[in-house]
Length: 163
Image (tube, rainbow, N blue to C red; front, side):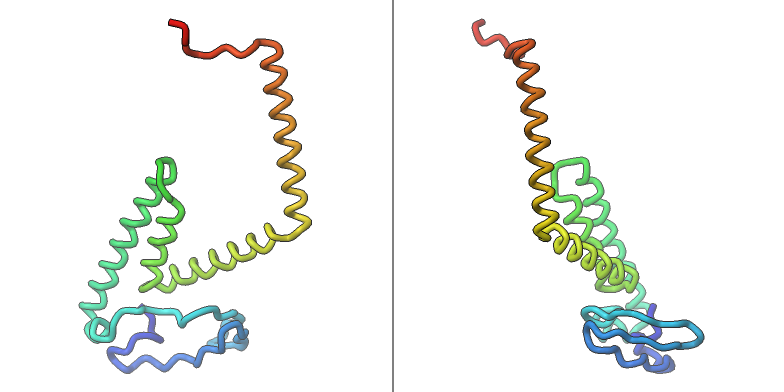
């Protein structure tokens, strides 16, 4: 549980105000250097207030969110070798976990940042040109190998059509 987002007992010290999106917060807090770029909403539980009001209810809410997210992630892992959108379902389970757990929110932020960087690199004209050239070279090599195979062995169907 997060002390910053724990509103039940009022004993927790209020958290430092978060810097605006994209700003860098720097400083030393409690002897630990902090240099974090904030992206998106504040970290912590997104459970309704009446659930956060009761410690037992909030804990059972977290257990329920964890179990539902776990079921979705396991379904996604099963879909990886089988037909289905495995990675999409896994990230959906992570999004379910991110509604309640800070570690899942951080994983999703890291993943989003890496996907954005990969998309930016893939759209770079030099990289696209290189990928197109390598694809064409690969297709020419495959076509040459298929041509050599057909020239040497001919085309023989694996089934007998005439019978």
